[in-house]
Image (cartoon, rainbow, N blue to C red; front, side, top):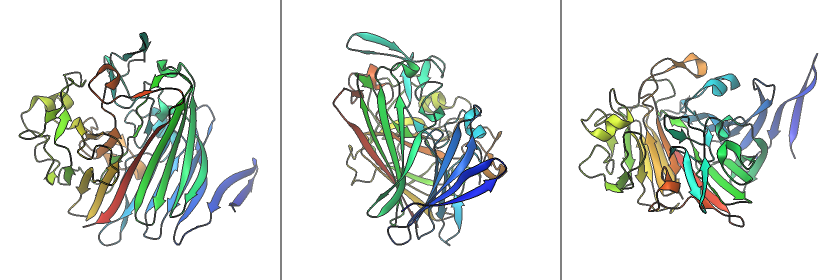
Length: 382
């Protein structure tokens, strides 16, 4: 049964905290208010905990993973995802911190695609491209939420109905995203969607990770392994050329544990496309696991704190991005400044611009079909 506590104030009776009792040893969740959007829409916050100290906080604005507290090798907790302490930070922000991305994650060339001979246009918000579903994508919407639970997990399920024509995409799209925390120190994100008209769909999560703690310097000494022998090279506009190129002999080779900063400034045109001034990573890697959730897709660790993140996904690709456009001016949670290269993302996805790339795995969703994917972030210490 859901237990609730209320606070009586001059404004009346308002729900402040709802506690979902643990259904398995050590698992619990809380439900709080998290302020309001600029137009007065209430935003809620769900806090998930396990017995090992992991704590994941999800807000209904943007379906955002607002906080993720993980113990280091000495048991010290720190928040390892970048973000803000209030709704207004996310409303005005342009970095997509922690957001659920849709309808189409990553870039669409010229913001355009065709389905069954009909042209569709998404508003441009990244030069000549549309990025992450347009300027008012899923990251700028308030989702509905309900606490959820599994046999060995506690979570929250978010739902959003995207009307046909929203940001130019066809079809009324029903989307469901469930965040679950397990006693095995796994944060699972499960996505489901259905449509009443043919459409394209590419959902992902845009959390920025710093395993030393959000705002605690850069990630250049953290070690990354990407189990991917190929990646999708891009043009100067960051649109895939259509090639699946080998990483061998390039700075994109993370097939063995490699410091993120080891080759980030290498003299390679792809790195200059991603960050013209200093270089950086912002590419889609073609995962060797080929959608097998039982196979490790990526592994990142921080030698200093001892924190380790292992990634598993049913998606064919992952966008590894090194926060190239953070410039040390963004003030995040607890007033911390987020520096250049201050985090990395692991955005599990279908490949960028897939609707315009016939050789890429399809992102088409038809009526009567069910979109589903799962991504797991597993945490441990070295």
